Length: 154
Image (cartoon, rainbow, N blue to C red; front, side, top):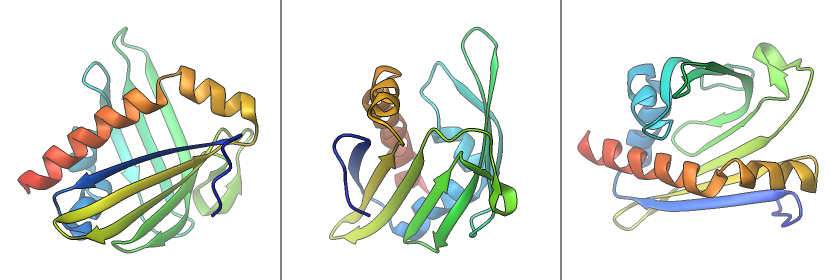
């Protein structure tokens, strides 16, 4: 997928763990809950079915107690290599009312670990800007640090 600076965001981290270990952190709900949100937010529910057409679902509990549901679909799942998911579809490729983003996460083996490459695409420049203002770089950066710490401990 080609990066478009008008509509896309990108974040990468070198994680000192094998792609298989990072995949487990996506696949196993109890591991996913440990890294997916910044410390003030808690992931209280997770249903990730890592296959094309599988559900990409989580519920986050915000500091004020509000629950935020994220329901989507995995478009592509190449075991230990790549996950593409969106909120623009639901389980089984059923269309959703709105689409905010499509994320393409690649786990690229490197000497000493895995390059975690997340390319997040939006329909419009305004959506990309909104995601940045929501704290994309800081929030996803914190969660990637947490993922790295967790994966390295497994």
